[in-house]
Image (cartoon, rainbow, N blue to C red; front, side):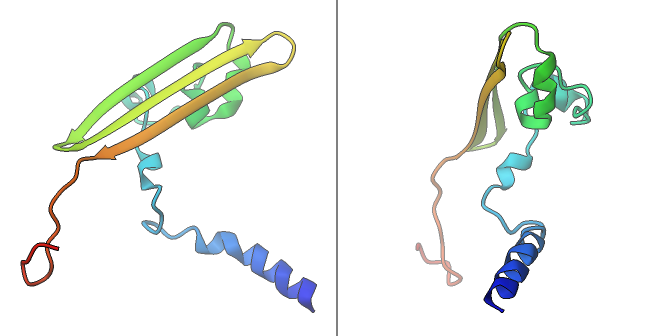
Amino acid sequence: MVRLAAAAFFLALPASAGSPGNTTANFLRIGVGARPVAMGEAYAALSDDANAVFYNPAGLAVLERQEVTMMHNKFFEGVSQQYGAYAYPHWKYGTFAAAFTMLSIEPFDAYTSLDQPD
């Protein structure tokens, strides 16, 4: 009975993660890389550069040389995004890659419903 309950719990767990807007990682939905964003993020089938780390990691298999990509995006006043990726194709072990993305928000004043500083 315990195994059945545990299996039901773990099978139902992904269903709760599918609702929109319930994560602190929504910034990962923001597109990265000039070429993929210019293509409307329809890049999964064409990913053949270091941006494949973000869109389709299988695209790293076709790399012939090492690549670095970096991006800084200023969204709104006080909101910016930084992204970088590096891919190194090895002749024997496949491609090694790493990427980072960061969303920065400058501090701002918070107020209560009574218009008093928090």
